[in-house]
Length: 102
Image 1: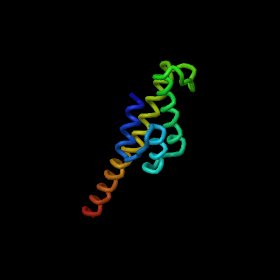
Image 2: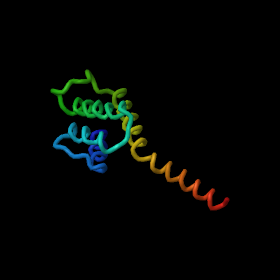
Image 3: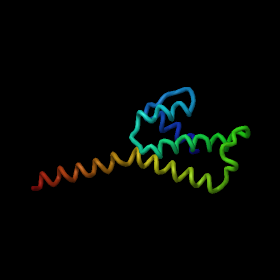
Image 4: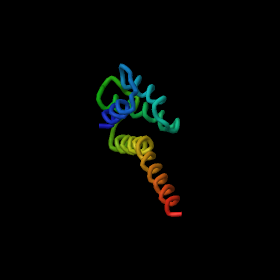
């Protein structure tokens, strides 16, 4: 589910590449996020690899705690990418309304 979300984020932002790794690298030029969150996206990709591929073992075990952390990080990335626009639009609308009232 997290990997699918990352893939959709890349698609939505036009980050292209043959692999999810390449698309996440391309995403760095398409979104404004702190470097730590961008690096965390690759950690999420690796966690997804470990969850689906036996030969990938970056994480020793993918259990409940890893899944919860992955979901939390994914939510933060989505908030950072999508919610800032809504907040700025609300702020600008309020500013415009104040000018019209004043």
